[in-house]
Length: 571
Image 1 (cartoon, rainbow, N blue to C red):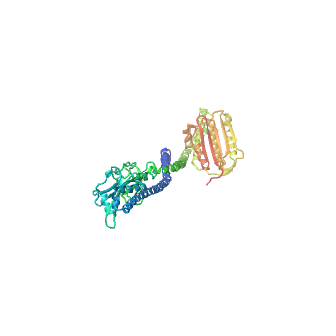
Image 2 (image 1 turned 90 degrees about the vertical axis):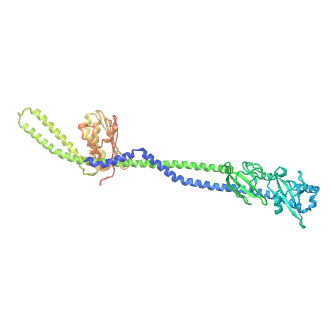
Image 3 (image 1 turned 135 degrees about the vertical axis):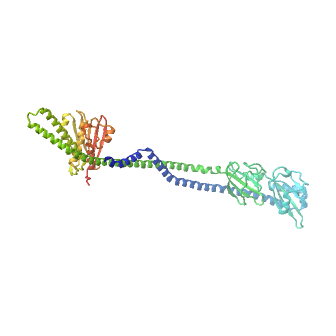
């Protein structure tokens, strides 16, 4: 019967016990909760940091692009002004003097000297007729008599009227730019005045831009040929090693990656009335160095925040897991207590049946033994009367002992009615100690009392609580050697309970014994004990709403503590 009733709860207890006793379960649960809470907490923070970084990147890029765009715009205006002034000067000379005046080398030389004083950058000046022949020339080279009909610029100036060439070497074998202006008189006669500009002035304009270290600026034509020397991409007339970004007359800034894999900002703008584009390149790392310096403090705050969040999450999770583990252990204890109560109930029903069945033959044995003693006493000459008398007395004592056992079994089996009355626990203890004083004196065992004064009275059952005290004191008296000591204490727990403890310096118990001492029929007294005393004690204390605790150490002694409620829990 016991096995049938207790099997389901035992299985539940075993499963939950295995689950609770597995540290991996709580470690895995802690890791999952930490990961989940960290993700929930850090994802918004990381998103905010990423958005902040993106916005600041764009803002800083805009703040860097604006000065770069303005710088290119100003330099572009300087180039346009420089070329416009030189073109206007050549155009003015072509229209201010007649063909014959310009054809005179001496006169052209004088005009050229005045022009060089007023406008820097001119290398030479020459008059070319409509047939492409160099009529007169003022300058350091021997170009008089040259014919330019095969030159592309000659045809373009004939068509456009004004022409500014790309940088080229030509007859001079050094980089230069040609400004050519066609003039036509009212009579229809035309000629071309052609001047050469030194590109060194282009370099001066670029140098005046005040570029940062690592930055670069240069002129390039529409075909991607460098018109001025570049710090990073080659010399004059080299081909630019990357494709030019889309460029217009207005300065604009774009991002690009060059052939070395470096990220750059590139600003460019076409110079009016030419095929030149002014290009400025600024590496991004240099551009963002200020931003990185400024953002170090925010990075430190972000990393510190992440660390603090992880610590807080881990701390809170550990606390939750600890609470969960305590809850699981309490649940395990409740299931264990339920199983224990079920065992007590099953054993009680079994004990009641066994006690009832044993009492009947015991009554017959007792009756027959008494009859045998009466018959023997009626015959004074009964042979071996003393010997048979001793045997009969032994039978009667054994019957009496069996009756005691069955009585305790019946007491264990039935739920005794609780009769609650307000009692002085100290008085019940003194009364119970009175039952044991003679045996204690006989064995020279000290019964010391340390009872609290003004202990509040509590509602409880006198008979049952006295049985609890008596069972515990009997066990303590059996455990101590002759000359030992038993200390009985009482105190006010001030948390809704009063406490009573019985401490002895006896043999103590092993951990296994202490664990099973409240199990029915568990005993260490072998043939002298039934194993029901502490089970009954445990059941009474629980029924009265109290708690019972054991603290013991082998060969040093045991302390049994009982906590009884100050308020009645009946019903």
